[in-house]
Structure formats: structure tokens, C-alpha cells
Length: 314
Image 1 (spheres, one colour):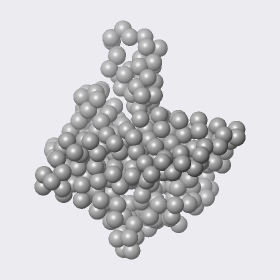
Image 2 (tube, rainbow, N blue to C red):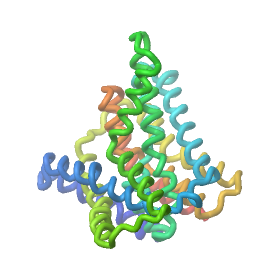
Image 3 (cartoon, rainbow, N blue to C red):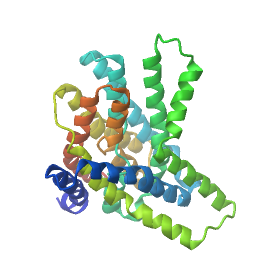
Image 4 (cartoon, rainbow, N blue to C red):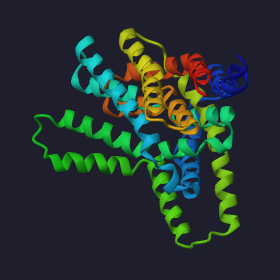
């Protein structure tokens, strides 16, 4: 019970506060949009830049940590896609969007603050290693599968579809933040020394990312009205909150992953789908209602499921 109130509730209180003021009209939609543009396009990429620049790349990028998380993620995608196709008889593009909703956990906006509150700032290295390839890998996969699904029968070449997918990923602000951070890391290892004033400015912007994004997330969630498609939504929530972290936990235990890595893999996997899952569905006009309601419902239910995973982890 202590974990629920001291670790999880504070994070969701910020989300709830943003939801409340948006619901009451105190914080209007235009203000929410502006805050989220700042948080997602500038502050969060800066946070990723700073984290990647300082991460020990040689130590933290290890298959024992990454494989349990990503095998769980792609297994969740396959279950979501198959359920949408064979249980709910959804169109092909809807199946991809529903699978992507099961695939893409809110690793940054929810995963980092909850992990930090649960295990301290020094526990985040494994999370940053997962996040470093999270958006590039999953966006590339999702966009590629969706583009091939959409292009089926259109006569477009494989190369052209793949180029369109890669171009879309490289334009994503979070991916730009990750890539520039890794580049800075390499330069620092080669002997580059940046002035303290530079890092002070970076840290000031990075420090605003999570509280601003959590507050803005609450305002965005207010727009998502729970509607229909209960079966598909329940499937997405189950994959995101139970299947993905369950597989990460089982595989981590099976392969002898250390406690710190196991916590990073499972807690990152245990996060509900983020707003990016809805943005992906909205981009292609596929399964938007399922994605939107899953983001809202999954975020609410994750208060309890995250508590459960914290109790299970060593």
C-alpha cells in the first residue's frame, strides 16, 4: 500500500490535475496543445539528448536487458494484431493500429518518473537503454508495416515504401533527441568538452519535460471519451499491462537478468500505451476510437497494475 501512495499516486495526481483543469475549462484546448508541443517536441527530446549523452553506452546496451523487453513488446503486437483480425474481424489497417497500441508503452512520460520514485535516480540507466531504441525501432516497425499494408495492390515498390517509413521516423522529435544525444556521447568519449553553461541550459529544459508532459497528458486524455469497441480495448489493455510485462519478467528470470535490469525491463513494459499510440492511429485514420480509449482506460487501470508489478519485483 505504501508503494501505491508514495510512488504511483503522485505521478497520476499530476495527470489527474491536468485532466481536472481541462475538464473545468480552466486550461483550454489551445493551451494544452501548446504545452504538449513544448513538452513532446522540445523538452522531452532535450531530456533524451541529455540522458543519451551521459549514458555508459558500452555497459547498458546489453541483450540480457533488451531482449526480454522487446520480445514481450513484439509478442504483444502479434497478439493484438491477431485478435483484431480473427476475433473482431477488423480491416487490415485497423489490425496494424490495434497491434501498435499493444506494442508502444509510455516508457518516457510514465515509466521514468515511476521508476525514479520507486528505485531512485541511479536505477534509470536500464530504462534509458531501452528508451534509446524504443521510438526508433517501434516507429520504424509500425510505420513500415502500416505502409506495406496500405500500399498492398497500389504498385509501389518495396524500396519506396521502406524509404517513406524511414523518413517518417527520422523526422520524429524524440528520435532526433536520441540520435543527437548518442552523437554527443561519442564526441565526448573522443575528448570533446562542452562548457558548464551549455549543460546547465540543457538540464533546465530537460527538468521541465516530465512535469509539463504529465500535466499536458491529463489535458489530452480529457478529449478521449470512452466509446464502444469494448473487446478490442480490453485486449489492448491486457496486452499492455499484463502480457508485455509478464513476458519481460518471465524471460528476465529465465535468462538470469540481474535485479536492476529486471526492474527496468518490467516497469518500462508495465506502462500503459502513450499518446503516441493514438497519434499513430490518427495519422492513418485507423482504429482511432480503440487507440484513444485504450490510452485513457489503460492509464487509469495502470494505477493498480503498476502497483501489482512493484509488489512482484525484487
